[in-house]
Amino acid sequence: MRLAFVFAWIVCLPLFGADVTGKWKGQMGQGRDVVFQLKSDGAKVSGTMSGAEGGSHSITTGESNGNGNDISFTAASEWQGNPVKLLFKGAVNGDEMKLTVSSEGGEWTSEVVAKKSAE
Image 1 (cartoon, rainbow, N blue to C red):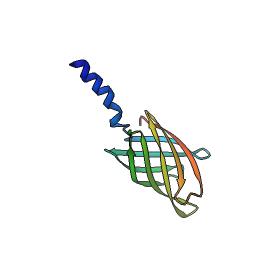
Image 2: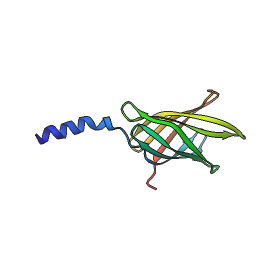
Image 3: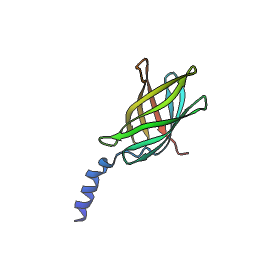
Image 4: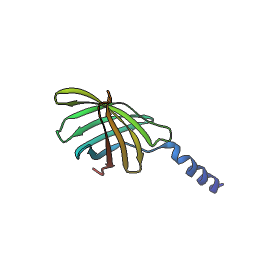
């Protein structure tokens, strides 16, 4: 009986997905620092994104799908004084998050690798 419970727990564990709650630090594009402060509530993801310039941008329409390791969200940002909506999509694997970020209009795309911070 105990063995069956342990087996069921191990099989079902991936269904719960990765917990993205916490601070994630990484670099976007050509070495631009980025920090995500994320909170997950079931499949919904919210929080903020900040960069080297120090401004904080709200994360909206965030979710983790499927196996729980897939993640996507948007953030309202700014480039040279103009508003830009950033689209993030990627995967969480343990304490590492790999994302592709693009502008809403598709003018550019970049990669982000962020590590979960102990802070």
